[in-house]
Image 1 (cartoon, rainbow, N blue to C red):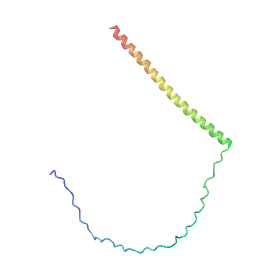
Image 2: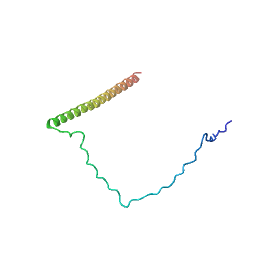
Image 3: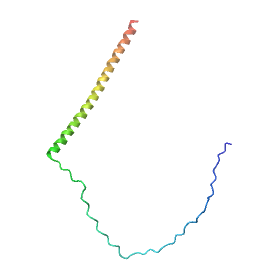
Length: 107
């Protein structure tokens, strides 16, 4: 009942074909290699090159500066919010500790 059952290998069904016989062929070597065709010239790029004018450069610099200022403002505000939260939690802890200490002195 608890012995494992090992499956038996099923016998092939249908027509079994023997493996095909491969006949060797003679290899003919040439005395001179075939001429190699020259490589074609590389194709021109499909899109034109980007032309940067002074106005475009100024716009890109202005946009980059704006992105840096906005990201910096967001990060500083997150840091400030964390600092204010930590300070308020510390003040609450001091007040609760003071209240618990004064209540044990009065008894």
